[in-house]
Length: 115
Length: 221
Ligand SMILES: Nc1nc2c(ncn2[C@@H]2O[C@H](COP(=O)(O)OP(=O)(O)O)[C@@H](O)[C@H]2O)c(=O)[nH]1
Ligand SMILES: [Mg+2]
Ligand SMILES: [Zn+2]
Image (cartoon, rainbow over all chains, first blue to last red; front, side, top):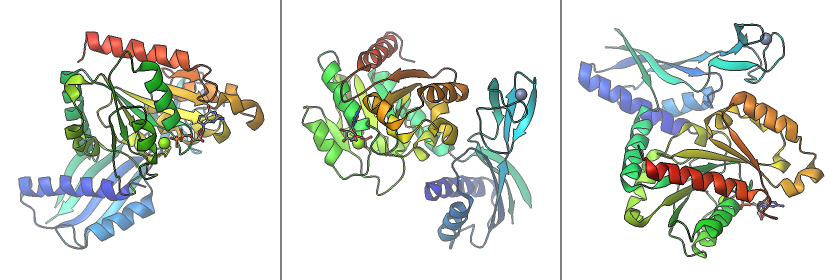
């Protein structure tokens, strides 16, 4: 729901990098977000499109990698990937002695392809 | 040419929030970020909290909820400085919106700043504003499946207030499940069962808040 402000923050970060590293054009931007972050991929794409009609990212492609939810279960004593996105139960034994180890609300710019 | 960056996209907001926090520490102002879905009882809780604590502390309020200035007027009736933020339809408050309200408050004479976030269980959880504590309200008619469906806000909060306990018997609220799932997501979460209508349980919330404010004033860092 706040994809516009996320893209605005992203573009600020990209502009800072462009100034620092002296590139003039961005071809591709790769992001990653946790499964439980509240980012809506389609809305993110749309926000990126309308906010990059001009500027250094004009025409650039946005890639979003969604990191799976990872849960460590203390009963099973190992880590699992949760397919259903429920952070409160172990996908293996269904018990609740678990802690989330990845795929939470991380939202990161990972890499860019630039000229 | 590929370049590796690895940078948190919310960094800019996190920085502003951290600056706000530094400022509040200097001024010894304790800040609450109150979050819930629309109608769970945020404004009611703000009113009850003001009435209970206004002899003890000097209180200010920021209203971020979108319903025009209706909530701000409810608070202003209690003779408390209140600023309505016009989020322009935004789904959350962010660090910069809070910073822009600063000229409206006399922080040298303020102890507690309560911000009522936009009614939304999703977005406010991701944006820090410089608060000491995030407080979340879940009201019984919303159902006990909310922790599992919206885990992030439960994970980020210091306190969960289960409000409208007076209605629990009529809406078949599964109290055990609510406690269980919320604690599974966030074992440190403090949970209080309250009703802003019959005022049950509120005294536990007030005691928690007073203790936090006193600890903070001893050692703002
Ligand atoms: N029965 C009952 N109603 C409540 C309680 N707390 C708030 N309400 C009512 O719920 C409605 C929404 O409350 P409000 O404080 O405006 O919620 P907000 O949108 O989160 O700020 C109002 O009509 C309140 O009177 C409660 O504990 N019990
Ligand atoms: Mg309200
Ligand atoms: Zn298990």
